Length: 109
Length: 114
Image (cartoon, rainbow over all chains, first blue to last red; front, top):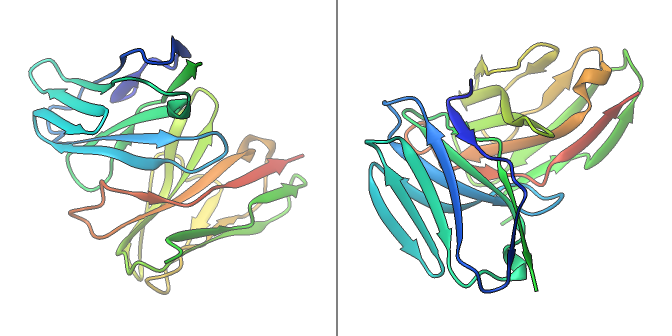
């Protein structure tokens, strides 16, 4: 079992929907939590970064970490077709992050 | 500012051939790493380096060699290619050991081994 688990999807939603992407992790020592976005045939790019528990908001994106339940979430408000991509969660306690398998998101017009 | 540059973008090899995937970064990052990405498997760490002259194995190191003679470059060598090494390879770098969680990725190298 991987240390970071993520449902691969695909998740298909209509434009304008609120999207919830989730991961769970098993290592209590993890302190860093990231979301990367990867467009088709491109490299992953950092979307959100949080340290320890709590929420972080950036425009239409909100990252949430609940360390008590070891749950990582990414919310996308007013989703757009340009949000269609694979979203990778990642977590780490030292300098090497552990990645989930990624969730494929499709936002259709 | 180019970031992380990988070459080649595409490569086809025959079983048993060797080759080197190149990775260069111009951000003066201490930490560099190589991942492979396969369908349903996510990103798996092959090798990493925390500075020039220092390398270590990741989750799936067998069949691959690395070296780090300069801060900028971190080549990945396939010693004797096998069909199981067909994958997309990503090089990633980060500012330092404490900030290595925030990775900057290259565009990827797509390798097919026949």
